[in-house]
Length: 345
Image (tube, rainbow, N blue to C red):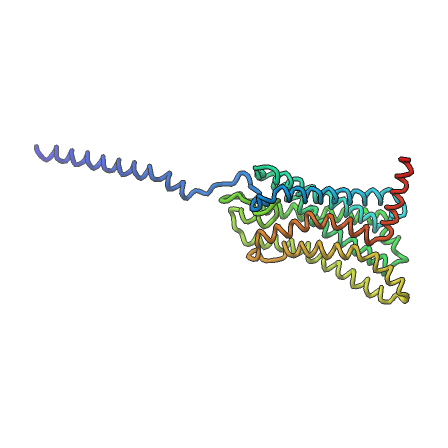
């Protein structure tokens, strides 16, 4: 008679204890899950020049003026080559395409950078970041291939002058130009798809003023060494192979120039290559510093400084170099300006 109530009380106490223990564990579970949760990134924040707040307006003015000069210089070259019939040759057609490529290249990064220098918000959506990277890489790779093609054009002109008009006929130039941009944007499509194939988590701060490969890849949830290696291999293929092909062209060019008997002939042959060679050294030099080095050697501040050089300064350098060092372009510019004055008088 006494044992039954005792057993019942013990059972009730055990049941209450188990319920309280379960409720405590259950209440702690979401907190533990919250601590271990990995937050997916829905938008990026471009760090840019936020570490230099006192220089924002100075940098804006400097970059804006440089951008205007770059646009006007490249557009002037395109107009001169289009209007002057003496420049309707493959060499100057490729130069016009290079100027158009430079103009498009600056449109991808500089307007967005200028806007962020004036705005408080530095945010960019993931689709916007992907589009910016695609066009930046596509135009950058096409630029490498185009400089290689221009080196080949100089090789044919100097080493095979009698066959130049046959080898570099308009249909061939058009096909080679199309191949340059198709190849460049194909590489960009592969690299961009690999980078954005997995979600981004943790920090959303991109240590750059635009969406470039290394800063965005660092934010990926999947830290795949194979993916990073494949992207590095593609970068080597584009930058290093293109540069080696340019060097090969110039090796044949130098060998041909040395055999020219007159000093005036050698000087004239070399003058047609000097501007292109200057642009090649600057472009491939900057690209090598950024893309042909191990990830462990990356420093955001150094990368931003080099990126300013090849996104702001180099596009300005092209029209300056080609107008100052190329006599035919200078003469065509004076002729075009003379005709313009005659029209307005």
